[in-house]
Each structure stands twice: as structure tokens, then as C-alpha cells.
Length: 173
Image (cartoon, rainbow, N blue to C red; front, side, top):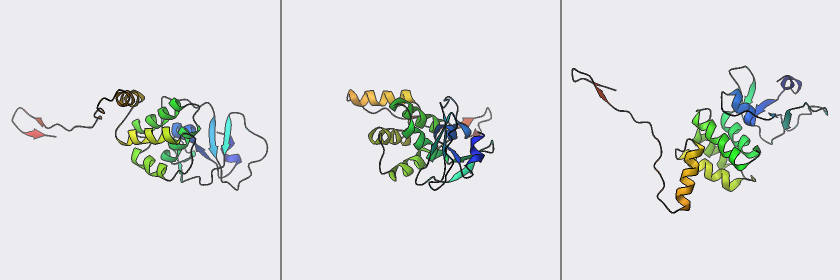
């Protein structure tokens, strides 16, 4: 994290930003940092830090640890695009929404503005699935297997509120 002040307008991005926002269950292999496209961070690279210069960095927020990071939805999309495999891309999207770090509907809205991506088909399908309620890789794989075998799409998990009745007959929520 000592590298961030060196570049002034730098912010954590991708998986590192998601972890800074509180995501658990994933350890990034490097720290992704976004800097303004016009910045000149110098020629020396810092081991373990990957510097990106996106055309549009997106909004920068301060995490609970005090570090600047891109918004969680932007970080989730970029993490999925920069992932080392398709499975890891799907995992990062599922983890970020399952843990309520990023909002699936906001990710979907941001994805609509993305013009090019090497994983366009895969990410579009995963984002649609998480927007429809998929919470885990297992659910994603199961739904895919149902489609492959021409079985009906499974119903998704949802929060259910049941009314409870006390001994006296009163209803509580």
C-alpha cells in the first residue's frame, strides 16, 4: 500500500479494491491500482503492483481502512475482466454480490456501457444470472447444467418473511 501515495491520484482497483471494501474468500495475487490516464507515475515499477490507466476510472471512494478505491461495482467488473480464468471471473462477480459488497443491478447497468471485453459472452451471462438471483458458483453451474440438459430453469433463492404467532394469538413479523 506504500505505492499509493507515490502516484497522488491512485486508487485500488479490481480484486484489491474488493478486498479493501470487505470481500473475503479471495486473495489477489497482485495489487491492481488505477491512475488517471494523464498521470506519469515514473518508470520504476513496484513489485506486486499492477498499474492500470483506464480511460474512465469511475468514482473513487475511501474504504473503511482509509485507502482510496474505485466503487465496488466498477471494481467487480474490472476484477472479472482482469481475472486469470473464466471461473475466477465468475467467482469474483459472485463473491462481490453474495457478500453485498457490490449491487448486482448496478453491475448490470455499468456492464451495459462496456463496449469491448474479451469475455463479453461469459460476463454478460454471469451478470444476467446474478441479477436474476444467483448467489454462488454452484448455483451458476447448476443452472447452466439444467439449460444444457434442457431442464427447466431452477427457481432462485429469496428472502422470505414469515409471520410468527405468539401464545396469546398476536401476530409478529
